[in-house]
Length: 199
Image 1 (tube, one colour):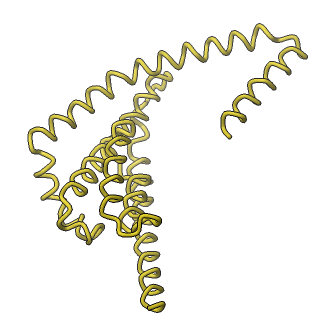
Image 2: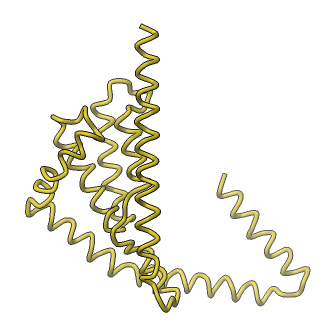
Image 3: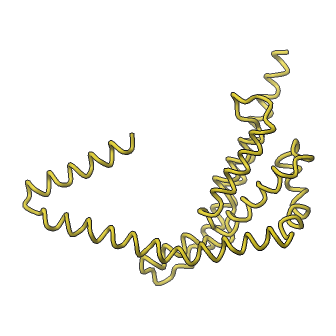
């Protein structure tokens, strides 16, 4: 669907450019946009490589295992049914660390791995489990200590104060995660009560 939307926007842009006699300006804007996209990707590459490598070092050094033990009280509250599922816990914690550091691109493959583990232990394959729903909430509205990707984008775009967003990001992420977790728990309890009533 989005392919048709983007294709329609491009066609309309050229139609209006031809009718207004500004074909050269539109073509130049397209070239400048492509060049800007490449420059931005290159500027993000170094930061992403650094943090992704750091996460891999943490995993191989056993730091993630220590973090898993440290985060076990929180994991018991958020995912009470995953006490014996070490692989799922490890994948979730790695994803949370990546999101905590603001590495959305690095968090994506970790999130996919976590969801695969949660799907593996899901008893009802046609439905998302409560753990899967909770993970989606935490992954989407994650607490971010250092919004690395956003800071890098702001710096690449020429911002004079790329770090000025840190405190607002902290506040928004804390509130969003709190609201999401509470909502997920309430819906989970409601569905559990409905299941008991049906039995």
